[in-house]
Image (cartoon, rainbow, N blue to C red; front, side, top):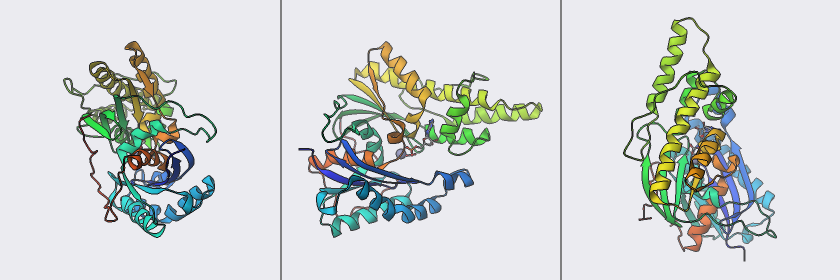
Length: 347
Ligand code: KG4
Ligand code: ZN
Protein backbone atom coordinates (compact mmCIF):
# COMPACT_ATOMS: atom_id res chain seq x y z
CA UNK A 1 0.00 0.00 0.00
CA UNK A 2 1.56 3.30 -1.08
CA UNK A 3 -0.92 5.58 0.72
CA UNK A 4 -3.19 8.23 -0.75
CA UNK A 5 -2.23 9.69 -4.13
CA UNK A 6 -2.74 13.45 -3.96
CA UNK A 7 -2.64 16.18 -6.60
CA UNK A 8 -1.18 19.19 -4.78
CA UNK A 9 -1.26 22.84 -5.83
CA UNK A 10 1.02 25.64 -4.62
CA UNK A 11 0.38 29.22 -5.81
CA UNK A 12 1.15 31.33 -2.73
CA UNK A 13 3.69 33.61 -4.38
CA UNK A 14 5.37 33.59 -7.77
CA UNK A 15 5.73 29.91 -8.66
CA UNK A 16 2.89 27.80 -10.00
CA UNK A 17 3.55 24.35 -8.56
CA UNK A 18 1.51 21.23 -9.21
CA UNK A 19 2.66 17.82 -8.02
CA UNK A 20 1.38 14.32 -7.52
CA UNK A 21 2.63 12.72 -4.31
CA UNK A 22 1.70 9.33 -2.88
CA UNK A 23 1.67 8.46 0.82
CA UNK A 24 2.95 11.93 1.72
CA UNK A 25 6.40 10.90 0.54
CA UNK A 26 6.85 9.64 -3.02
CA UNK A 27 6.92 12.23 -5.81
CA UNK A 28 5.23 10.95 -8.97
CA UNK A 29 5.21 14.36 -10.68
CA UNK A 30 6.49 17.79 -9.71
CA UNK A 31 5.91 20.62 -12.19
CA UNK A 32 6.90 24.20 -11.37
CA UNK A 33 6.29 27.20 -13.65
CA UNK A 34 8.57 29.95 -12.34
CA UNK A 35 8.02 33.68 -12.83
CA UNK A 36 11.56 34.61 -11.82
CA UNK A 37 12.45 35.97 -15.28
CA UNK A 38 9.40 38.28 -15.25
CA UNK A 39 10.06 39.65 -11.75
CA UNK A 40 13.77 40.06 -12.50
CA UNK A 41 12.78 42.80 -14.96
CA UNK A 42 11.09 44.80 -12.16
CA UNK A 43 13.68 43.84 -9.51
CA UNK A 44 11.01 42.25 -7.32
CA UNK A 45 7.52 40.79 -7.26
CA UNK A 46 4.56 42.92 -8.35
CA UNK A 47 1.60 41.09 -6.72
CA UNK A 48 -0.90 41.77 -9.53
CA UNK A 49 1.57 40.49 -12.11
CA UNK A 50 2.22 37.38 -10.00
CA UNK A 51 -1.53 36.63 -9.73
CA UNK A 52 -2.04 37.05 -13.48
CA UNK A 53 0.85 34.67 -14.18
CA UNK A 54 -0.62 32.14 -11.74
CA UNK A 55 -3.82 32.24 -13.77
CA UNK A 56 -1.84 31.85 -17.01
CA UNK A 57 0.04 28.75 -15.77
CA UNK A 58 -2.49 27.01 -13.50
CA UNK A 59 -4.09 24.77 -16.13
CA UNK A 60 -0.99 23.93 -18.23
CA UNK A 61 1.03 23.08 -15.10
CA UNK A 62 -1.73 20.78 -13.84
CA UNK A 63 -1.93 19.05 -17.20
CA UNK A 64 1.84 18.63 -17.27
CA UNK A 65 1.78 17.04 -13.79
CA UNK A 66 -0.93 14.54 -14.77
CA UNK A 67 1.07 13.66 -17.88
CA UNK A 68 4.34 13.32 -15.97
CA UNK A 69 2.79 10.87 -13.48
CA UNK A 70 0.77 9.16 -16.22
CA UNK A 71 -2.36 9.21 -14.07
CA UNK A 72 -6.02 10.00 -14.73
CA UNK A 73 -8.47 11.63 -12.32
CA UNK A 74 -9.94 8.31 -11.06
CA UNK A 75 -6.39 7.33 -9.92
CA UNK A 76 -6.32 10.25 -7.46
CA UNK A 77 -7.52 10.23 -3.82
CA UNK A 78 -7.57 13.97 -3.05
CA UNK A 79 -6.75 17.49 -4.20
CA UNK A 80 -4.56 19.59 -1.88
CA UNK A 81 -3.82 23.30 -1.97
CA UNK A 82 -1.87 25.98 -0.11
CA UNK A 83 -4.47 28.25 1.52
CA UNK A 84 -1.97 30.67 3.15
CA UNK A 85 0.17 32.48 4.09
CA UNK A 86 1.04 34.31 0.87
CA UNK A 87 -0.11 36.91 -1.63
CA UNK A 88 -3.91 37.06 -1.75
CA UNK A 89 -4.24 37.23 -5.55
CA UNK A 90 -1.84 34.34 -6.09
CA UNK A 91 -3.41 32.22 -3.32
CA UNK A 92 -6.91 32.81 -4.72
CA UNK A 93 -5.99 31.29 -8.07
CA UNK A 94 -4.84 28.00 -6.52
CA UNK A 95 -7.59 27.79 -3.89
CA UNK A 96 -10.40 28.51 -6.39
CA UNK A 97 -8.97 26.06 -8.91
CA UNK A 98 -8.47 23.31 -6.29
CA UNK A 99 -12.02 23.74 -5.02
CA UNK A 100 -13.33 23.46 -8.58
CA UNK A 101 -11.25 20.34 -9.26
CA UNK A 102 -12.31 18.65 -6.02
CA UNK A 103 -15.96 19.32 -6.71
CA UNK A 104 -15.85 18.32 -10.38
CA UNK A 105 -13.95 15.09 -9.75
CA UNK A 106 -15.72 14.34 -6.42
CA UNK A 107 -12.46 14.26 -4.48
CA UNK A 108 -11.76 15.36 -0.90
CA UNK A 109 -10.02 18.74 -0.54
CA UNK A 110 -7.04 19.10 1.81
CA UNK A 111 -5.83 22.56 2.90
CA UNK A 112 -2.14 23.05 3.69
CA UNK A 113 -0.26 25.89 5.38
CA UNK A 114 2.66 27.03 3.18
CA UNK A 115 5.15 26.97 6.09
CA UNK A 116 4.05 23.44 6.95
CA UNK A 117 4.71 22.56 3.30
CA UNK A 118 8.29 23.86 3.54
CA UNK A 119 8.82 21.67 6.63
CA UNK A 120 7.34 18.58 4.94
CA UNK A 121 9.76 18.90 2.01
CA UNK A 122 11.95 16.86 4.40
CA UNK A 123 9.59 13.88 3.99
CA UNK A 124 9.85 13.81 0.20
CA UNK A 125 11.69 11.21 -1.82
CA UNK A 126 12.09 10.55 -5.51
CA UNK A 127 12.51 6.81 -4.84
CA UNK A 128 10.43 4.82 -7.32
CA UNK A 129 7.48 2.67 -6.20
CA UNK A 130 9.68 -0.45 -6.20
CA UNK A 131 12.44 1.10 -4.08
CA UNK A 132 12.24 1.18 -0.24
CA UNK A 133 11.38 4.50 1.40
CA UNK A 134 14.17 6.31 3.28
CA UNK A 135 13.50 6.73 7.04
CA UNK A 136 11.14 9.50 8.13
CA UNK A 137 12.50 12.56 9.99
CA UNK A 138 12.46 11.84 13.75
CA UNK A 139 10.46 13.75 16.41
CA UNK A 140 10.94 16.02 18.27
CA UNK A 141 12.20 17.85 15.19
CA UNK A 142 13.54 21.40 15.22
CA UNK A 143 12.62 23.15 11.95
CA UNK A 144 14.23 26.29 10.56
CA UNK A 145 12.00 27.72 7.83
CA UNK A 146 13.80 30.47 5.92
CA UNK A 147 12.13 31.87 2.84
CA UNK A 148 11.41 35.15 1.06
CA UNK A 149 8.44 35.78 3.31
CA UNK A 150 9.27 33.95 6.57
CA UNK A 151 12.00 33.14 9.06
CA UNK A 152 10.72 30.89 11.80
CA UNK A 153 12.20 28.44 14.25
CA UNK A 154 9.56 25.80 14.96
CA UNK A 155 9.54 22.80 17.28
CA UNK A 156 7.58 19.93 15.76
CA UNK A 157 6.48 17.31 18.27
CA UNK A 158 4.65 15.05 15.80
CA UNK A 159 2.66 15.26 12.57
CA UNK A 160 0.75 18.54 12.53
CA UNK A 161 2.01 19.58 15.99
CA UNK A 162 4.04 22.78 16.08
CA UNK A 163 5.35 25.29 18.61
CA UNK A 164 6.76 28.58 17.39
CA UNK A 165 10.05 29.22 19.22
CA UNK A 166 11.11 32.40 17.45
CA UNK A 167 10.82 34.38 14.26
CA UNK A 168 12.12 37.46 12.54
CA UNK A 169 11.08 40.73 14.11
CA UNK A 170 11.49 42.57 10.79
CA UNK A 171 12.69 41.27 7.38
CA UNK A 172 12.63 37.58 6.44
CA UNK A 173 16.07 36.11 5.65
CA UNK A 174 15.26 35.75 1.93
CA UNK A 175 13.86 39.26 1.82
CA UNK A 176 17.13 40.51 3.34
CA UNK A 177 19.12 38.61 0.68
CA UNK A 178 16.91 40.12 -2.04
CA UNK A 179 17.25 43.69 -0.68
CA UNK A 180 21.03 43.38 -0.18
CA UNK A 181 21.33 41.99 -3.71
CA UNK A 182 19.55 45.04 -5.08
CA UNK A 183 21.84 47.39 -3.08
CA UNK A 184 24.86 45.59 -4.53
CA UNK A 185 23.49 45.87 -8.08
CA UNK A 186 23.03 42.09 -8.38
CA UNK A 187 20.14 40.54 -10.34
CA UNK A 188 16.85 39.40 -8.72
CA UNK A 189 16.44 37.18 -6.75
CA UNK A 190 19.31 38.31 -4.55
CA UNK A 191 19.72 35.03 -2.62
CA UNK A 192 21.29 32.89 -5.33
CA UNK A 193 23.09 35.95 -6.79
CA UNK A 194 24.73 36.87 -3.45
CA UNK A 195 25.60 33.25 -2.80
CA UNK A 196 27.32 33.01 -6.19
CA UNK A 197 29.15 36.34 -5.76
CA UNK A 198 30.30 35.32 -2.26
CA UNK A 199 31.72 32.01 -3.39
CA UNK A 200 35.48 31.97 -3.08
CA UNK A 201 35.57 35.58 -1.88
CA UNK A 202 36.73 36.78 1.55
CA UNK A 203 34.34 39.05 3.48
CA UNK A 204 35.27 42.71 2.78
CA UNK A 205 34.26 43.66 6.34
CA UNK A 206 32.56 42.28 9.43
CA UNK A 207 28.94 43.38 9.44
CA UNK A 208 27.15 43.90 12.79
CA UNK A 209 25.08 41.07 14.28
CA UNK A 210 21.59 41.90 15.55
CA UNK A 211 21.10 42.02 19.30
CA UNK A 212 18.32 39.50 19.86
CA UNK A 213 20.10 37.53 22.60
CA UNK A 214 17.89 35.79 25.14
CA UNK A 215 15.27 34.84 22.58
CA UNK A 216 15.05 32.70 19.46
CA UNK A 217 14.00 35.72 17.39
CA UNK A 218 15.95 37.07 14.43
CA UNK A 219 16.45 40.54 12.99
CA UNK A 220 17.88 41.32 9.56
CA UNK A 221 16.89 44.91 8.80
CA UNK A 222 20.05 46.31 10.45
CA UNK A 223 22.20 44.28 8.07
CA UNK A 224 20.49 45.86 5.09
CA UNK A 225 21.25 49.34 6.51
CA UNK A 226 24.85 48.29 7.14
CA UNK A 227 25.26 47.21 3.50
CA UNK A 228 23.67 50.49 2.37
CA UNK A 229 26.22 52.45 4.44
CA UNK A 230 29.14 50.38 3.13
CA UNK A 231 28.08 50.96 -0.48
CA UNK A 232 27.57 54.70 0.17
CA UNK A 233 31.04 54.90 1.77
CA UNK A 234 32.79 53.40 -1.26
CA UNK A 235 30.81 55.76 -3.55
CA UNK A 236 31.75 58.84 -1.50
CA UNK A 237 35.42 57.89 -1.58
CA UNK A 238 35.18 57.30 -5.31
CA UNK A 239 36.35 53.72 -4.82
CA UNK A 240 35.11 50.64 -6.67
CA UNK A 241 32.51 48.69 -4.66
CA UNK A 242 33.90 45.25 -3.71
CA UNK A 243 30.62 43.51 -4.60
CA UNK A 244 31.90 39.96 -4.05
CA UNK A 245 33.49 40.84 -0.70
CA UNK A 246 30.37 42.62 0.55
CA UNK A 247 28.21 39.71 -0.64
CA UNK A 248 30.47 37.37 1.36
CA UNK A 249 30.24 39.62 4.43
CA UNK A 250 26.45 39.73 4.16
CA UNK A 251 26.08 35.99 3.65
CA UNK A 252 28.43 35.31 6.58
CA UNK A 253 26.37 37.54 8.91
CA UNK A 254 23.00 36.00 7.93
CA UNK A 255 24.33 32.45 8.14
CA UNK A 256 25.97 33.15 11.51
CA UNK A 257 22.70 34.51 12.97
CA UNK A 258 20.63 31.58 11.69
CA UNK A 259 23.14 28.90 12.67
CA UNK A 260 23.81 30.33 16.15
CA UNK A 261 20.15 30.44 17.21
CA UNK A 262 19.29 27.11 15.60
CA UNK A 263 22.20 25.26 17.21
CA UNK A 264 21.39 26.85 20.61
CA UNK A 265 17.75 25.75 20.36
CA UNK A 266 18.74 22.25 19.25
CA UNK A 267 21.01 21.87 22.27
CA UNK A 268 18.59 23.39 24.79
CA UNK A 269 15.59 21.38 23.61
CA UNK A 270 17.47 18.12 23.03
CA UNK A 271 15.84 17.48 19.65
CA UNK A 272 16.27 14.31 17.61
CA UNK A 273 17.31 16.26 14.48
CA UNK A 274 17.13 19.65 12.76
CA UNK A 275 15.29 20.10 9.45
CA UNK A 276 15.73 23.02 7.07
CA UNK A 277 13.11 24.36 4.69
CA UNK A 278 12.30 27.36 2.50
CA UNK A 279 14.11 29.03 -0.39
CA UNK A 280 17.09 30.21 1.72
CA UNK A 281 17.71 26.57 2.73
CA UNK A 282 19.08 26.22 -0.81
CA UNK A 283 22.06 28.31 0.41
CA UNK A 284 25.19 26.15 0.48
CA UNK A 285 26.99 28.25 3.12
CA UNK A 286 24.01 27.95 5.49
CA UNK A 287 23.86 24.18 5.03
CA UNK A 288 27.59 23.76 5.65
CA UNK A 289 27.73 26.04 8.70
CA UNK A 290 24.65 24.51 10.33
CA UNK A 291 25.88 20.99 9.66
CA UNK A 292 29.23 21.73 11.27
CA UNK A 293 27.74 23.46 14.37
CA UNK A 294 25.19 20.67 14.86
CA UNK A 295 27.77 17.93 14.47
CA UNK A 296 29.62 19.47 17.46
CA UNK A 297 26.57 18.68 19.61
CA UNK A 298 25.81 15.35 17.93
CA UNK A 299 22.61 16.45 16.14
CA UNK A 300 22.00 15.58 12.49
CA UNK A 301 20.79 18.03 9.86
CA UNK A 302 18.13 17.20 7.29
CA UNK A 303 18.06 19.34 4.15
CA UNK A 304 15.92 18.77 1.08
CA UNK A 305 17.61 19.16 -2.33
CA UNK A 306 17.51 22.83 -3.49
CA UNK A 307 14.60 22.28 -5.91
CA UNK A 308 12.38 21.12 -3.03
CA UNK A 309 13.47 24.07 -0.84
CA UNK A 310 12.03 26.75 -3.11
CA UNK A 311 8.25 26.84 -3.61
CA UNK A 312 6.83 23.70 -5.23
CA UNK A 313 3.72 21.54 -5.19
CA UNK A 314 5.44 18.38 -3.93
CA UNK A 315 6.00 19.80 -0.44
CA UNK A 316 2.28 20.62 -0.25
CA UNK A 317 1.50 17.06 -1.35
CA UNK A 318 3.74 15.71 1.42
CA UNK A 319 2.01 17.72 4.17
CA UNK A 320 -1.38 16.88 2.64
CA UNK A 321 -0.64 13.15 2.72
CA UNK A 322 -0.30 13.20 6.50
CA UNK A 323 -3.31 15.50 6.94
CA UNK A 324 -5.41 13.19 4.73
CA UNK A 325 -4.42 10.13 6.77
CA UNK A 326 -5.41 12.03 9.94
CA UNK A 327 -8.87 12.56 8.42
CA UNK A 328 -8.32 16.28 8.03
CA UNK A 329 -10.42 17.53 5.09
CA UNK A 330 -11.25 21.11 4.15
CA UNK A 331 -14.78 22.39 3.64
CA UNK A 332 -15.86 23.49 0.13
CA UNK A 333 -16.02 27.00 1.60
CA UNK A 334 -12.21 27.03 2.12
CA UNK A 335 -10.78 30.55 1.82
CA UNK A 336 -7.35 31.91 0.98
CA UNK A 337 -5.82 33.51 4.11
CA UNK A 338 -2.79 35.77 3.37
CA UNK A 339 -1.61 35.92 7.02
CA UNK A 340 -2.45 32.33 8.02
CA UNK A 341 -0.50 31.10 11.07
CA UNK A 342 0.54 27.48 11.61
CA UNK A 343 -1.97 25.51 13.68
CA UNK A 344 -0.03 25.90 16.92
CA UNK A 345 -0.62 22.78 18.96
CA UNK A 346 1.57 22.15 21.97
CA UNK A 347 4.47 20.24 20.42
O1 KG4 B 1 10.53 29.61 -0.33
P1 KG4 B 1 10.68 30.53 -1.47
O2 KG4 B 1 10.83 29.96 -2.85
O3 KG4 B 1 9.46 31.53 -1.54
C1 KG4 B 1 8.84 32.05 -0.41
O4 KG4 B 1 8.00 31.33 0.20
O5 KG4 B 1 9.22 33.18 -0.05
O6 KG4 B 1 11.92 31.46 -1.10
C2 KG4 B 1 12.39 32.46 -1.99
C3 KG4 B 1 13.58 33.16 -1.32
C4 KG4 B 1 14.06 34.37 -2.07
O7 KG4 B 1 14.15 35.46 -1.16
C5 KG4 B 1 15.45 33.96 -2.59
O8 KG4 B 1 16.36 35.03 -2.67
C6 KG4 B 1 15.86 32.96 -1.53
O9 KG4 B 1 14.69 32.25 -1.22
N1 KG4 B 1 16.90 32.03 -2.03
C7 KG4 B 1 18.15 31.99 -1.54
C8 KG4 B 1 18.86 31.03 -2.31
N2 KG4 B 1 17.99 30.50 -3.22
C9 KG4 B 1 16.80 31.13 -3.03
N3 KG4 B 1 18.74 32.69 -0.55
C10 KG4 B 1 20.03 32.44 -0.29
N4 KG4 B 1 20.78 31.55 -0.98
C11 KG4 B 1 20.25 30.82 -1.99
N5 KG4 B 1 21.00 29.94 -2.66
ZN1 ZN C 1 7.89 29.45 0.27
